[in-house]
Length: 296
Image: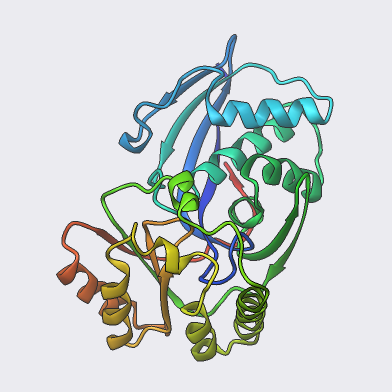
């Protein structure tokens, strides 16, 4: 039997407050796949986080790989894949985007597609419906993207020079539930103001003006005001983080994970107060994953 190839795909956080369905940041929690040629497709799952996922072609990784191969005229050979994960499911850390990115990469490598970045993004955006998480998982670092239905565009941005802390509650929030509480439309005045907040946030992050960026991260009008009912820890976490010197505390993706940006070297203070207050939550300092999906 040939030696397995190992693929590591990063987690991601999306929105960063007002960058709704557009801003994404890759983080150093990983979905790991050990890939071996086989006579038929089969998935094994080592991590308890992956318990209950299918082991056949109904698996999301296979679905993404098949869609990619079919779209670009390739043939997928059968593979045996052993999966492990540090990315909790349904917590707003891009677990589905990581799985889709893995499938796209599998198809590219094993069906010998030689896809461009734009072709990979196109498939990922079609499956996710927005390019923020998938762009971060595929390409690393911080990204800003826009979806036009079947097509998408993305730009990689300078990585923020901040400490990153995540507070991960024990409960799940399904993306569909988090979207169901959002309004169907906004007034023109509110849409203009909310878009302007996102624009200036992006400029402030790119320029390294983190105090201003933090202020704007907490002024989202697109989704956070409506999702507070689903994520009960956010108001207290934001208060405590500010008292500890943080720039901003916001919902990570659709939640319930809470993301904090803080000045370099201050993460330990925030972690300490979070662990004292939220004893049933997991608290971690994370780094930004830069670079592409890793193979060994």
